[in-house]
Image 1 (tube, rainbow, N blue to C red):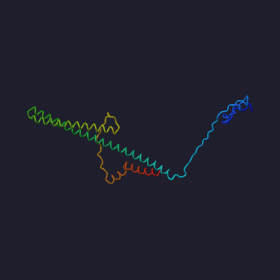
Image 2: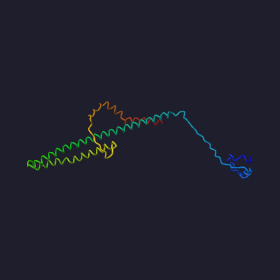
Image 3: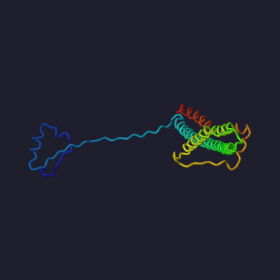
Image 4: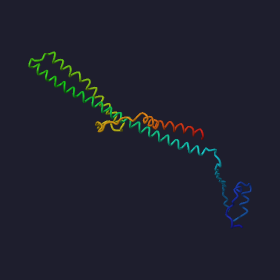
Length: 213
């Protein structure tokens, strides 16, 4: 008993008023009491037996949200495609307008050369020469506006396609003629299936599921 024990498991022993006398009662022994903290760990798991349809409503809501997101992605994709097509035809129209003005400019420049030659021969009056010069000069502002329209349309198409400001871009006319539009009944069916319409329908369904949840 004197040398066979070495610790105590009672944490209240250290707080005893007779602690010093108690230690001296065991001469030659090793008395090293220490604190021991006791923990009580518990875990609780619960599973509802009946949720009044909330689980099913939450699943329906998640499905509706996924459908809304898909419809919104389709809407964005079609919007970008439509905007790119519009920018393409706008650039094509601007290029054709500039080409038409260039043909007119070459024609009037050739006419001016003829009048200048006649004027040198004395076969044309100064008034005819001035009129020919004014006719050619009148195309310069239109040519400048046409070139500006081409650059604006080209920049817009670059932006839509995600290209850099200095990227080279050019367009060519469609190889095949555009198809005729479908009949009106078919257009009505297609309009009802547009992604933005489906998006609104899915949002309405989603609101109904939110109320249920």
